[in-house]
Image (cartoon, rainbow, N blue to C red; front, side, top):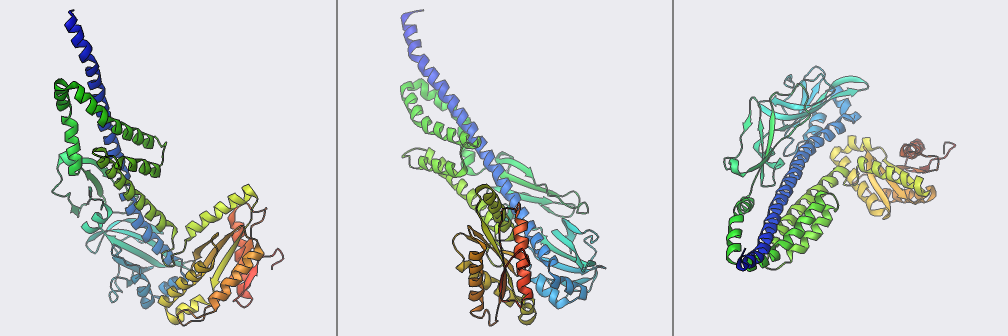
Length: 490
């Protein structure tokens, strides 16, 4: 081998190695980007599914609220169309477009979407099951249906059903991120994919599996299709075409290519490492967002565009997750916490008290004669009373207190690091504040029960039961009072 050959080989081999390493890094980058893209698609598919579940859960909450009201059950028993229409009309939303209350023999007692259409027999949906969720052809339209049997004093008196018609607008609302299409097909209805989709732009397909009743329509499919945006298509083309230009550039100007590759690949490698850490759960979504922001400040570098795109996706994801969490823990009428959240607070306080030997107290507040307010002034005024009582409580609790709607006209306050005497003073303060002025021209009084956690308690039911017992005594002592639970019946 001649000297010139050795010199040439010695000069070229390092650049060949650099080219090979650069090519491998680029390949790794695109694979990681692809994995990140599909991971984001998986996350978006879960968000779409959660939106569907959210609509279903809203129907369930409304149906259960109706079924848990003795006043509503009495109206079904008495076949009071006026009362039933007023109630179920309020359950209608832009998506929940139909509501029915049936008698035990299938007679329509009220339609929330049509005040004057009742008295016919409704046979499209089976009514023999205690609880039902499925997709049925109702009045010529495939619809999500959730229903429940109603029992008044242990007697089966009828059923309530809420319907969400399956429309193009509904499917578009479920998949509203701009890069996905949700389609629905059954034996009678088909909403096809958008004509703009072609095979080359489809990234991934999912089938939404909903737990439907066996009596639902058969051969139903929900297909969620994600397609590539123009930016992603361009990125894919670059991935396919980048090797030949790199090889050509390496043969012409190896030193320049080496420097350019080193300059450009270093930020990409750092971003890849960051994405790997997130995929391996070594960092949180918030930490990923913070680290990505650093790449946005790089001047004259393509990495900032990818980083900003990632930031946008993370922000949208966090916003959706925050909104879902807020909805899941907030009472829709009063805007204070709901029972689900308050049970979590109680569970946390019990664990903290057992671990740190601390105390807390529970106050249960009940609006006196609330049923009479509803009967006398109507449910709209009743709802306003609930809202304003909740606002007064919220405005006058301490920073360490938690307030939520426990059920019906009952509210709960959980007081951290508070004994029963301090809780009593807070409860009496609430009583006086609420009694001090009329609410919607109505004199509103409240009764309150107070209980303190003690070392023998192993779960929150015990504390709440004592507070409830104290409330019962306050109610039977003339109302408009505060009672503390005592071991000797207060």
